[in-house]
Amino acid sequence: MDPWGCKISISEVPAEFEDNFKPEQKFDKLTDSAEYLAVLERKLKALRKKNKVVEDLAAYRADCLDRLLREGCDLDPVIGDTDSEKLIQE
Image (cartoon, rainbow, N blue to C red):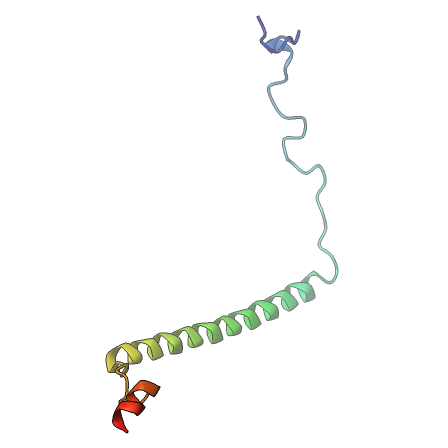
């Protein structure tokens, strides 16, 4: 018994796709395909250069953070910074 109520038997269903995803025709290259590929290659080269800039900036950032962690930062309050300390000194 079919749970969906269809009256199609398995033997009626085709064993392959209608299309099979195969092109029916062979296509010829366009006349300007070589020029188009050259333009795409130039764009790819430009993107790779931009990526190098991003890598350089990331390396510079990592170096700055590393230097900050190594050298430390003086976070101790300086005497006389707050108003109450100024009053005490007077």
